[in-house]
Length: 156
Image 1 (spheres, helix red, strand yellow):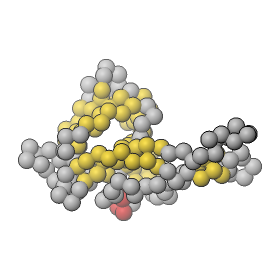
Image 2 (tube, rainbow, N blue to C red):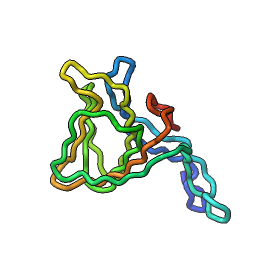
Image 3 (cartoon, one colour):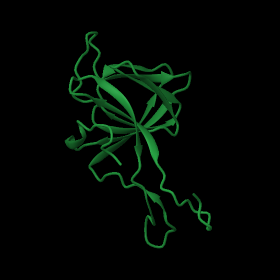
Image 4 (spheres, one colour):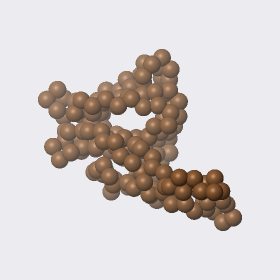
């Protein structure tokens, strides 16, 4: 909904893919929504905007460029991490057989630590570049072990 001033009055949501491990060690991908947005100024004197201060944690920010044709072997995420494609496209396939392709504007949370090899020896997830262009990703790796077993729905 839009107010008479032209401002949005309904809180937004932001969809993301959550890669996670179940109690049997099988990895999955679940579509979730960030919904904890509040309309407020980000600092004094600034016009209000929708903000979702998801968490405050020790984190590492990394930018990675996956070359065209790049495919990783089956692996777990090195740390729980938010993954934001900045250009190009990439995919993630989990041991349950689900493959999700993502590009600019998509968001994922990788948290498949503690997975167990399946009958074919696959562990965690497989990922690779889609198409003939490289893929630039921004990673926000959480250095807090509290998020290692995070299940879908933990973030609002």
